[in-house]
Length: 120
Image 1 (cartoon, rainbow, N blue to C red):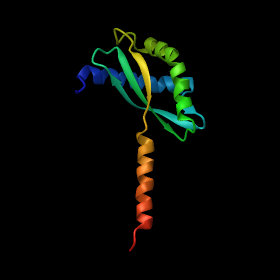
Image 2 (cartoon, rainbow, N blue to C red):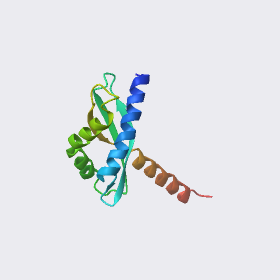
Image 3 (tube, helix red, strand yellow):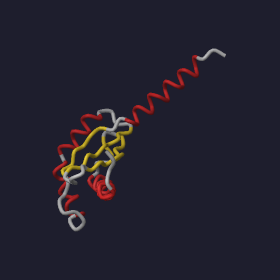
Image 4 (cartoon, rainbow, N blue to C red):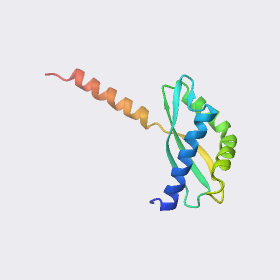
């Protein structure tokens, strides 16, 4: 199912504001690594935002994700203050682990391994 124009607009707004919120709350640097918001998906009714987080060089990704989930109420409150004039209702925030970066690193390692073991 494709996203509507309004869903894309709200997702862009939420992503922009959440990036700033994460920076100000110190959530973008966790466990010696970096946390970034890779994607924001909004449900068609605009009541839920699914935020996919990418962790770079973070050892305990699940623990870092739980830390962010524990502060989701605080994050949603700050988001509400920022977008209250643009949105009728503030979406419920659900955070997910985005493992595409891990997948890319794994594929690069496999390709390098194939190149090394290739008989010439």
